[in-house]
Image (cartoon, rainbow, N blue to C red):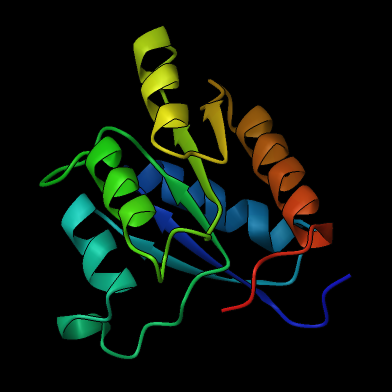
Length: 143
């Protein structure tokens, strides 16, 4: 068990999905801090501590949507995995796409998991909490 809060970066442009994730974290058992960015470029700026994200923490876990403005989730994932300082951060793709080519491409690019967003809020909350429970007990690489 970890003795610190899990730092989570949510890369999501849908405000409703952000609210669901926030609600999941409040109701869940995992102690965490949630940071939200709304597009692929913001995600990379956050991870590289650029501009308004100069003081951003290194996340322990990233939830990444694929359908993002500016840079797609696939592009973000590829850049994360090419960066030696970021490549060990677990990245869970959390997206509406169930297309086989998206799933294969995500895993080929180094995704730690691929989860289609459930249609109901209740199921979405359950999925988020299940994933967080797993990563809360898992040993994560050092920052």
